[in-house]
Structure formats: C-alpha cells, structure tokens
Image (cartoon, rainbow, N blue to C red; front, top):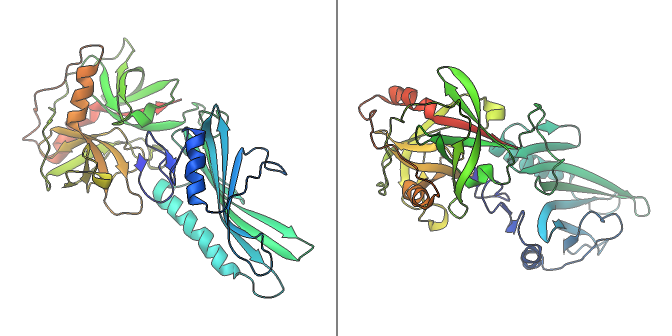
Length: 386
C-alpha cells in the first residue's frame, strides 16, 4: 500500500522517505539531502563506517556549539540507496543550567511511536530498545539511543528510525513463519486461464510469488509468474503456473469509463493479514474525486477505508463492475484512499505478449451487497512473495 504522507512511502514503486528513494540513485539522494539539511557534515569514520554518507542539521547551543538536532545516514550499494536512517532528535540533559525537559522528550518519542502503530498496526517484533515492522521489501525500526559525556556531565538522548531495503540486505526482516515471505498484498483473477492482477509494488523484487485462493472453503496455494508490468502506473499482470488450477469465469465485468464523483464503491482485499488474519475483508464508500494524490489523473480518491495489504485488490462499483485497483492511502487522513482507474489496466492488457481475455458479463448486478461479496470472494486472492 502506498503511504502518501508523514515520512514514509514504502509501498509504492518509488518508496521514498522525505524525498529520498529506497533503491534510487545515490547521487540524486545526496542532492536531496543537501537541500533538506542546510549545514552538512560528512562523517564516515569514527564508528560510522557502516554508513556511506552522513549529514547533520546543526542548531545553536549555548553550552556546546556542536550539538545537533537531526541527522540523516545513508548506505549505498551498487550506486543505489540501500538504507536510510533518521536521528529525528538529540536532546541534552545536564545538571548545570537549563536542560531539555525529559517529559517533553518522552512525549516526542511516544507521538512518533503512536503514528507507526496507527499506520502499520502491531510491530512484527519488539523489545526494550526497539520496535520493528516488516513492510513489503523494507524493514523499519524505531529505537532510542543514550550517550553519556562524563567530561561535561551531560547525557544525550536520540530518537532514531531506520529503513533497510531487503533487496540489498536480504538477511534482514525475514518472516518467522518458516515461509520467509517479505511482502503480501491482494489481487483478483481475470479469467479461467489463471491471469490475475495486482500492484507492481506488491511483487517488486520477488523471487517467488504464491497466490492463495479460497476454493470451495479450502485455501489453496498456487505459484504464479509475472506476465507484464507497468511500473509507472503500479500494475502487474500475473499468471498462475500450476496445472491443477481451475476456476469458472468471473461474474463481473470491467467498466473502463471514468466514474462520477459520488458513485458508490466497495473494496475487497486482505489488509494487514499478519495482524487482522487471512480472511477476506470488505469496506465501502464513494468516489470522492476523479483525481488522486496531488491531482494524479490515473487514480480515483475514494472514501472506502483501505489499509496496507489491500494493495492490488479490486474496487467495484455498487452494481458489481470492476472500476479500479486499490493502491494507496494517506495514513494521517480519515477515509482517504486511492485506486488506479480500470482504463490503465486495459492499456496493459493490450500491451501483453499473450492474449488475455477479460470478463464481460456482469451476472451479479441485481444481487444484494452480501450476495455480491459471496460471489466475488473466490476471485479475490491473497498474494505473498519471497
């Protein structure tokens, strides 16, 4: 799921953190960092050998002129950004003269932690020093650091958030269920030949793609392969490669025309499956705008609540027509999500190296919403990658 505010955008094809792209060009990242940090200090030696580039945003301090508040660390591999770390604050505690109030410092840390909980749910791991989330192909951790300077009787306290790309650090953040999945999302089946749709960012960097389908009450795992992807518009078409796969023609049709503001919609998917469980979830709402984040014409803004894990799932109009693919949220906003318009899926289908049939008969238009969901459920899949 693409996150479009605060400091994180881990689920999109750009995966940026305050403008710096995980997996992006290292030179471009340094330019961005220099723009954001007016006073810089490259500090690669003295305990920072792991980091290739360090910048510090200094602030004036009456007692120690080298005190600083914010620091950014970046690690590069193959001229790409492999890891980014932010030291969001460094507080000074001194028994002499004015010192920063410790309660204020703890409130600052707690506010950061609460935002992460609201956005991503329960951490994948936690102990006394850190909270860790495994998010698609990135691992995120928030922690605290203490440093005591006996020569000045001063204690420094820092709040730090780290992001590591699993592509460049494959040993970090593996799931503990024995399957070693590093990402999950949703998708939907297009036809009896096993073609299905998801977001590009769900399967980006995957070596193995497993598709979980509810077949007559039993969840069955199938292997899938990428047929074609549109990275810019965040769409991928997969095909189930197992010969044992069998399903009837989907009961919905696809509406490629742009829908009006106020159109009723519902989304199906598997949000935060590691927390909320692997049962299909449904939310409903309306199309709030014909354009998405910052006026993006490729997406709708919708009020149907969606979460990380809904990525790649179908968005239906209330009459049962597929009109979009859910892919993004704004975590600090209420009921603001985004879905890629179906016309961009049609463009990708027409560009595919093989013929892909699409469903044309909406046989559920007159059904109640619960009946529609029951009929559509076998065609909405959970996708896990490793």
